[in-house]
Amino acid sequence: MFDTEEQQDLRAAVSALGRKYGREYYLTRAKTGGNTDELWAEAGELGYLGVNLPTEYGGGGGGITELSIVTEELAAAGCPLLLLVVTPAIAGTILARHGTDEQRAQYLPGIADGSHRVAFAITEPEAGSNFHRIGTVAREDGDDWVLNGRKCFISAVDEARTVLVVARTEDSATGKLQPALFLVPTDAPGFTRSVIEMEIVAPEKQWMLYLDDVRVPASALIGGTPDAGLPALFSGLNPERITVAAMANGNARFALGRAASYVGSRTVWGRPIGTHQGIAHPLAHAQIQVELARLMTAKAAMLYDAGRDLDAGVAANMAKYAAAEAAWLAVDTAIQAHGGNGMTTEYGVASMLGGVRSTRIAPVTREMILNFVAQHVLGQQRSY
Ligand SMILES: Cc1cc2nc3c(=O)[nH]c(=O)nc-3n(C[C@H](O)[C@H](O)[C@H](O)COP(=O)(O)OP(=O)(O)OC[C@H]3O[C@@H](n4cnc5c(N)ncnc54)[C@H](O)[C@@H]3O)c2cc1C
Image (cartoon, rainbow, N blue to C red; front, side, top):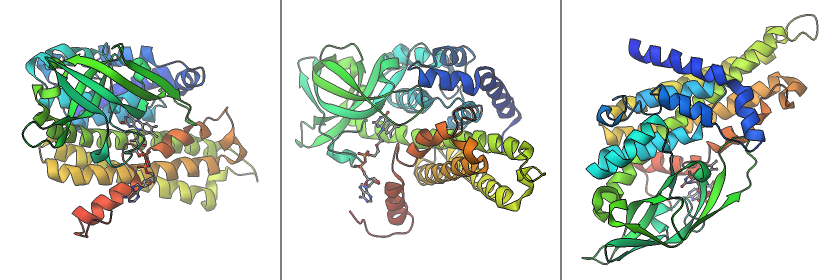
């Protein structure tokens, strides 16, 4: 990669932290219904959770490039932390860019030091990939807002103190509904949740959220005005896509690392199986795809950090697409290279299937990215 010396040091230090905890720690927590509190807390203490946040709020003053390094290296060490792509990437960016002074002071220091996790809720059962159709509504009532609606597949709500909820408000001038973002405490009256059982081996659980007359003060509205909603939302989605790509790249490196070490030592016909091209070439092919995805991810992060939001949008979508495809290929190839051991608990590669497969679906599906590229890069008419 094009890391500066400082970024190389960050990469090495985060990698060391990830290896200190390691895959066993991550899998044990995932399989026993636990979470990764100790790793999260230590990453916060060391400044890794706030690398992209402003220094005046306890952050590192870096960008999405640095946060991608943190996300990738923890995943490459076997500890992909899903909340990194939610709390510092989405909520941290939105608050830093669009929060009021009061909101920044209240939330950013806790996000940076790891004491305040924020989940993000946009997806709804009826709207799915079409967020323009979300039905969660926020109604102004005196100095408060009252929220009603349902959200699905919201990650790690049980670990979060706050959920950044995307709702709709009515524009008083035009009567049109427009998206607005609200900081909703997870213990607010009327806010309930139920777990969605998933075939994913990960500590983070997925939740249905129910908002029934959830009342929040005016200070919970991001930017202090509903007009801040759309720009705030868009500024959070690219960091999410870029860090998901980084996590997929780290997962892919972990799987290929495991496979390379296995095929170098496993002997069936008197020679290590890695000497057979039928085994080595698919791994080499996957390695190349992963390096290309890393390159695209670094490009997207650089464009985003340079403030080139339009170019970054295209690159972030492409990076997420490329990284998800490469990670899926890498894990599938790594399993094949392990033979039967690829499906065992002991070797642990199959445990990656659900999580890695999900990155082709979330936070935006591969089909919606292809739609985006066809329309915005190739100039085709919108097909839906
Ligand atoms: C592990 C995981 C974690 C998640 N975490 C969060 C979270 O923290 N917060 C949150 O808000 N959401 C989260 N999500 C939700 C995720 O963002 C959505 O699942 C995703 O955006 C797809 O929406 P959907 O599931 O409703 O699929 P749908 O929109 O129903 O799509 C179903 C299929 O139809 C295809 N499709 C739909 N429309 C078109 C079209 N116009 N052209 C071509 N194909 C189309 C899709 O590509 C997909 O293959 C998470 C999901 C998962 C799996």
